[in-house]
Each structure stands twice: as structure tokens, then as C-alpha cells.
Length: 487
Picture (tube, helix red, strand yellow):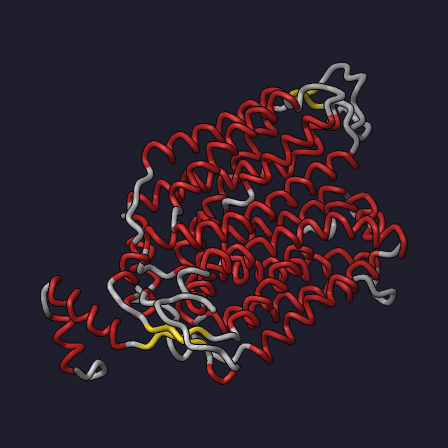
């Protein structure tokens, strides 16, 4: 059988469903699957890109007061240096998913790396002594906006990279590594921004140091990523995928019941976590907990989340229990959120609050890459960037709505002797009702997901129809692989 012949393709296109299934299976078994060692280089570049972009996102938040002083602007304007990422994500994410699924991973990573690098350099230029003070903030904001435009290109890429370059038993791990790089970048920014500013006493050096990984990532992406896709597919799903056009793919997603439940419920979870990260310091300071302690709690949640994601990635790669893992983790996260809503209103309970934040991070942060893989499984053969991108957009929209709601529910505290918040009546707010509402939203989304989400693993089923003979890249000294087992 000539797999590339026009007669075969015409027969596949015009025959019945059963005949198409049979012919596709014949075509799969005739394809030699191969994995290439350079996939690890591409994964490293994406991790570096994701980490550096996240560091750019959170550069100013831990040092907001000093930033306002250096730039000569208000704290509200400094906050917009971070909020611009959310605004850009909401309005440009659909365009980004089209770019990833239509123009390809290579184009997206190179474009994202250049936007990220140019933004980082523009931020440095904005702090030069020759720049007038009134022009500093607009230039820095311009650089921050370029970095924000790069974010969707790199944050939606992990599922695409895992599908294109990795075999089925490594996809969850690869997605986990690339996704968690963003979280590690946030952690590093929280740690190093205050440290660098303390020892250098200049915002210019802080931005210059953060520009270095962006420049390195751009160089590696531009020079090292030379292919749109591997010459031979790593798994059967890449053979059977129809690569649905973007608009048709979106239509298929919006008529997919399982995907819609995941979109809304897990998007709600992303929104809750954004609220937790954003409001943590304000919630705790009213009860007498210092900003340093709040920063430690946030860091602990991230560290435990990275560890949990690593363990979950390996487990799911072996068991393929995407749905079970996602449901269990969401339930445990909802329990942690409910406990946090109670203990955060108590004073002098540092150990318990720290433990709850660790629990929250361990089960909440870690499930993100698994849920994104689940989105691909239940929506296959729609493009990976489209399925994961819409979930991210859903999370950002719900995060913005939740933040507005929770801030509106916070009431001024008439007298708060324990408060260590910044001086001023606006800073002393009671967060008792907002944190309870946050816990309720988390529990509601979890209950709906557990009760109503059911799906078939479409990508795994497509791969099961073939009997691949998988080989490593012989040019790099790899050994022959059989039955998709990794050497």
C-alpha cells in the first residue's frame, strides 16, 4: 500500500467511518515513530523562556515602594506593571493560540523570545541616566508590555511541545517541566528582586540582571530551534491528528461538553489561585503577620507546588490517570482553601498558616500541567495550544472578576490593634467574608467538576490503534526503542 498516494488519500476522505478507521490504522502501523534527543534542548529553551518571562512579570511587585520612588510615580501605576500581563492575556490569547497551532511551535518560540528580550532591554533603557524622569515610566511600561505580549506565546507552548516532540510516556513530565518553569520564575523574582535592590540600591542593575536570561533564551531559540516539527512523529497521535483549522477547532471545543466543564471549573481554580497569590499579604497583615512572613508563605506554596508537579508528572506518565488525579487534587485543594479561610483569621498561628499554604501549593499548583494535558486528551484532535489557551483565558477572566468581587466585599476595620498593614484607613480591611467567599468558589468549582466531568482519552485511544516501532535519533548515538519504551 502506498501511503502517500492520491488514491489512498481520496479513499480515506470519501469512505465510511469504519473504512477510514481501518485505513488510518494501516497507515499508523506503516509509520516509523522516532524520538530525538534534541527535544530536551527545545524543552530547556522553553523552560528558560518561561522562567525569564515570569521574572519580568513579577519584577516590581516585591519592591513596589522603591520602584515608585525610582520612577517618580504612584503605587497604583507600579501595580499596572504587573496587571498589564493580565490585560494582554485576556485580549491577545486567542491570537496566540492561532499562531501556535497555525504557524507552528518554532515560529512561536522565536517570536516570543524576541518580544521577551526586546521588552527586557527596553526596560533597562528606561532607567538610563540620560532618559528624562518623565519618560522613564512610559519606557519601562513599554518594555513590560512587550514582555506581556510574549507571555501567551511561551505559556501555551508546553502542551504543544510535549505533543510534537515527546512520546506518550514522557508528555506529562515534559509539560510539567515547561509549565512549572513559569512558577519557578515567580519564586525567583520574589526572592531576588528585594535582594538585588538592597545590595545594588539601583533599579537599573535589577533590570539589567533580569535581562540576561531573556537575552540568552532568545539567542538559543533563534540559533538552536531549526525545525517546525520533528522529521518523524514520536507517537501515533501525531499521525492521526487532523490539525483542525483554528476557527473549526474553537467551534469543536465550544460544543464539547467535557471540555466546557473543564474550561469553567478548572478556570475557576486558576482564578482562585490568582486571588490567593495577589491578596495573601493584605489578608495576613490585618491579623499581625508581617510582609516577610506573607512572602515566605507564598514561596512555600510555590516550592511545594513544583515538587508536587514533578511527582504527579511522573505518576501520570506511567498510569495515564489524568481525570482521577485532577479530581483528587482539586478536592484536596478545596479543603486547603476552606481551612485557610478559617486559620487566616486567627492571630499568632504562623505554623498552621504556613502548613496550609504548603498544602494549598502542593495540590493546587501541581495539578495545572496535568489539567492542561487532560484538556488535550478530551479535545483531541483540536490543536494543543487552542485547548490549553482557552482554559488559561478562562482562568484570567475569572481571576479578574473574583478580584473585583473580593475587594468589594472587604470592609474597613474600625480598630485593628494587631494590624501591621501600611498606614492609612484603606489598608486596614477585614477579609473575613472575602476569604470565605473564595473558599466557596473553590468548593463550588470542584464539586461541579467531580460530579459532571467524564471523558474518553481521545489522543491515547488514537495511539492505541497503532503498533509503533519507536527509535531514538541515531545521529546522536541513541539506541533503538521498541513499543514506545524509553531508554
